[in-house]
Length: 305
Ligand SMILES: C[S@@+](CC[C@H](N)C(=O)[O-])C[C@H]1O[C@@H](n2cnc3c(N)ncnc32)[C@H](O)[C@@H]1O
Image (tube, rainbow, N blue to C red; front, side):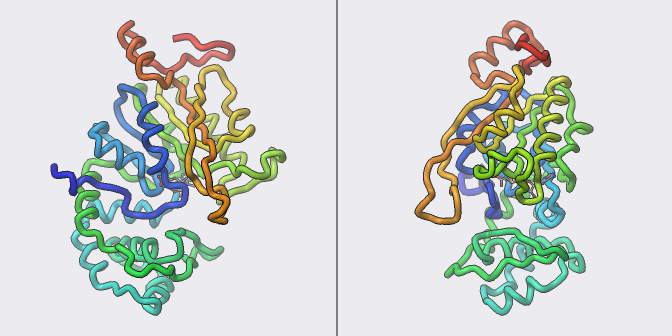
């Protein structure tokens, strides 16, 4: 496979993990069966793992139906998607015309083309819908946005051929995973502000109860010998949620925007949490000892293998 044909994310996505990919890959399990990414978004970690040939089988899911349909269209009918996209001009009037159309009255390929076009030409690559579920992001100010990257779309299609794509909430992993699988969770982050008030924050429709439910799922997966890695903001809430001996925590630095004021952008810390030792050497030692898995055993008080 030539270098140019290696797939990369085809959408811009809020919270995209391209920047954190090195940190995640350094800490991934050395051995796993199926890879799960239940908050897939633009799939930065999936594509990186694919490019490095680290995945045998993957199940990608997200609650966003248009997003998952876009993946499905690229997997199943990429030529049609490219054909539709090539007829779309970069033009403000056309943007608002296609934006006003109901994606659910379109074919799969048309719906995907619309999603890619709006994402690449709309303001900041945002995905935002109003209460009626209608996409309401204004036209962006790009001179020549690359919404028709044929080569990458073809490469993405190839990468997705054997991938299972599901539109579902994150708890789907409880039913689908088997011992020895690996789940990477990248939920909407706990906001950095309002951390003092544990109960009141609500971000992107993902609230504290959802974060707690996600933590409980991580505990269930630990009991099941499924490897989990999770990224979230470095806040006291995150640390408290995962303060169990069978979770390891690493602090990493990211250049993520702290807020929309460009001047206030800078390095902030994020947390990577896992239920196995993140050091490669420790994992290998455990495997040498003929341990079948290197998930920390679920015990209330201490870590044992
Ligand atoms: C931080 S983004 C993930 C970004 C992704 N890692 C990337 O590289 O682009 C969070 C994703 O979670 C999805 N999401 C929000 N609530 C969800 C839920 N209850 N179940 C599954 N996915 C959800 C959003 O649609 C969004 O794509």
